[in-house]
Image (cartoon, rainbow, N blue to C red; front, side, top):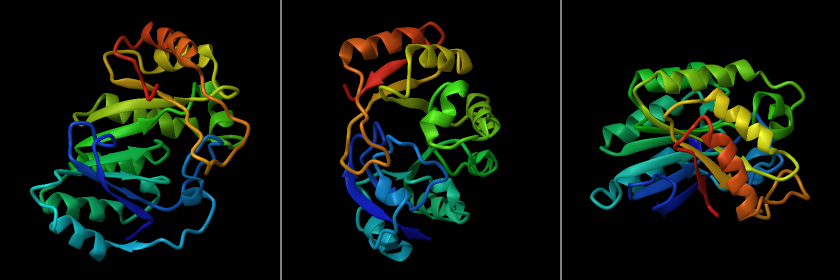
Length: 229
């Protein structure tokens, strides 16, 4: 497996852990607000071989305790399970970021105990998905299956939505809340223009507007929180 990048230390990507973050190439979605456009729509010359990564990891035993895997969409890669298993074999915990469009692969990862924590993006309400992911007719049933797998499973997880003006409305967050209603961890994330977006002309909700989105979600998901604002 080839990796598109490595952040050698993060205290944010895997909360509660001293971790590194590895990035994978490619994604099945084209979310206009994606901040990693280089990993999604363009070839990236920066490649890390898995052997190099594991050498890096072995030298940091006792310093790092976790690895966050993100993208792109990691579950695009059919050898991801083997990669995760090798990380686990070396004694590190694994956090997986996913968009939920590969439920069968997610189920395999979960059933083998390869992920200690999963962060799944819920891009919008069911009605708003096409606009949020940049596709005409996304198969929402895949996302629904992934949501169900996490909510009915034993792996620790969170749901999250990056809130973007012009793409999301208060009603979207009310509908997301209805969808995942319960005692789940749910984060409304502040949008930041990284300078490497797929779309253009996008803006963030301000603090007062984000509070309104949060209020809508909390009607159904009491633990909903904002992040990054």
